[in-house]
Image 1 (spheres, rainbow, N blue to C red):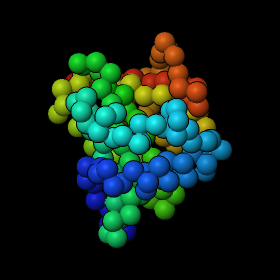
Image 2: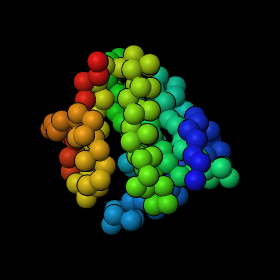
Image 3: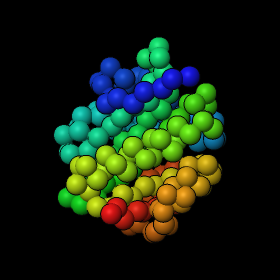
Length: 155
């Protein structure tokens, strides 16, 4: 399956929400369209207009099979959000591709640190983050479905 990365468009909103909620359900977690996942309803406001980015991985039919966002926290820090892959795209190196893309994009946008929150049940994702140098930390607060956080200082 040939997959390509592109910037997300407003018309991707429904496909993105379906992807995120489907992946969460795969791990026994629930989507929260009025809370943690409300950013999916306004990618421009949550990511782009604040100096962040949101990209999607699409197959050759245009179906969204992966996503990754960078939300600005401060002038030097961003949060890695919504990095998800459809089950059909897992185990093929696409997660690593999304993460490396996000790290490169964060540097291009001028960020020096990336933080993320996740749920410990997402073991594959956590292993990928740790393999790329992310370290655990304790933030001031966590999103309701998250029970751990990681950070990476960028070169």
